Image (tube, rainbow, N blue to C red; front, side, top):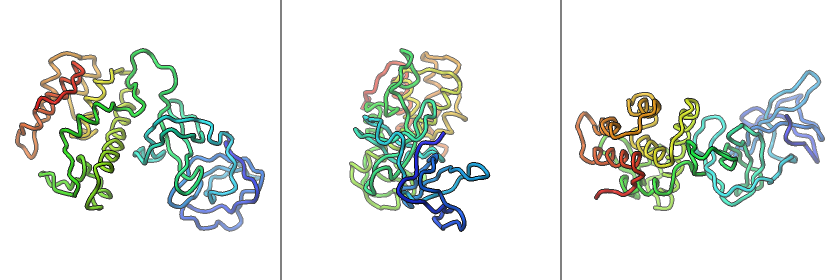
Length: 293
């Protein structure tokens, strides 16, 4: 279904690098379906009509009028790349343009320093009515209490460093190569990186829980998100008995053994990791976010 119209001029079609495709263009007045907007190149991926049927191509981000232009007010959402699923930013207290309704998510265009509708991505809806107890109830996926809990464990470092296992790290445990390469960061930057990364991991956990029909309380979901931030999403979803038992319905103290099984680094048991696993278990079972310092 189309979601926009070309108005004011025709547009040459282009390849993914922005090179003009000879003999192809989108005419003024054509209805098109926009699915992605590149912030860096300001290229719009769209489907447009031709005599032989619809065709997909890229056009410059100009002369496009959207059907749902800035009609959805968003309080706060992490924005995820529609292709990779990685967190790419956030929107807060602003109107966005709905490109596609993806069921539990919207594909939206939103404003940046380059102008209106100059970047796109996917946000969770969360505004729709939910059952009383849902897999996740917080629009940021994880709670502020969980962010503060992770901060207290990771600790803030304003420069890149080796975390002791050969992994270059910066801020509050951020290991993204591009951010590490910056060399230094502010506490504000580190907090935003933490929120983006942990919500990115949380979205993958939620998708898997939803596919299995498993519902968790906020504190239970937070505990698994903390575990995945420290140990990795693959470790949780694919390698741990902890996740298998939770998905099978176990919600008792016997889970502590599954949590604390993940306290080794380089073949050695570390007291700090053991403490963290115990406190994640307390969070899961008792909604206890307090560090036992």
